[in-house]
Image (cartoon, rainbow, N blue to C red):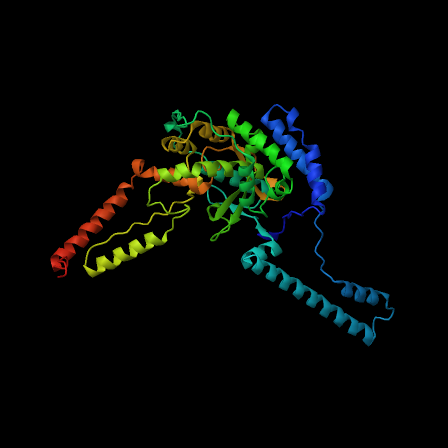
Length: 439
């Protein structure tokens, strides 16, 4: 692998008022008829404002002004064998080291003030590792770029292909009880979701980051309001939102094994904003469906209570010499193994209004993805019917796995081993009389 730096940070406009005026003047969504045209107009208006008023990123200066003056003085010297020339060389080297130390100190200070980890600073400074070799489906090492792309595509195509396609059934429609119409999305919802959206995130295929929307002013909020309400009304989303580019980041272990990489989808930020609003609307209903034992990824819940319960249980079993068996299940690729048809079925069982589910279904029916392994190297697009890429991963996956106890059983050999272990423990304790309760 080689280290490669390839990230462009958002540079705020120097004149924010002019940026907002430019965005507003280029918005012309009233004359558009389709969802695709509305989104295209919002994208073009924002891109035009960025090109005009957002300065290009200034290259980081490696040398300060004093060092440059000393280097100019050295170039002007005719005799390069004098003591003065050697002294000037040492002074230049000293200034360069001093300037680099100051830059590193400033970066560390910024990371600490933003409550980030040193890993963030290291990644931003050094870049990320670029794949130079990988194992194919047969375990053979491939090094040619086209072979790496082909092997990567096959791996993720298999990962995101459902193994239970034959079980798909038509999902019964659930009408929202107590109201015939879904309430329209209001501008306050968009503003609230915008505030919650994190900055400094990689852009999707359209190249727009959430900061450009936040700086767009009230006019772009109105345009987004029209777009989002039209999506709910027609139960579809813009076709530009259908593709997601995946980048893969190495976690640990063998760098040639694709199982040791974490796939990260680079979604269009306007789409993420829309799904954040939907997630906020559906969270309360989803939480009602979940049991109290589900503590992960839920507001107001935590795993500390469960840890305390297990701790007390272990202590009591030791105190009274009782057998205890604990089973810990770690799902491999938990979010990526969610069957989309099952998620839609579970949302219906959760009494989620079918108009919300129809938007999700439309997204799943048309979604494509491709994997990017370096700056200019991507696999071909392919369809997926597995993996959760629409609502919040945590909330919808909670609903998905909540339904598993009704349909999922452990493998027979695991059950048999557990039963044998339990039988041996009980027999040994009966033989020694240790199963008697303490007085």
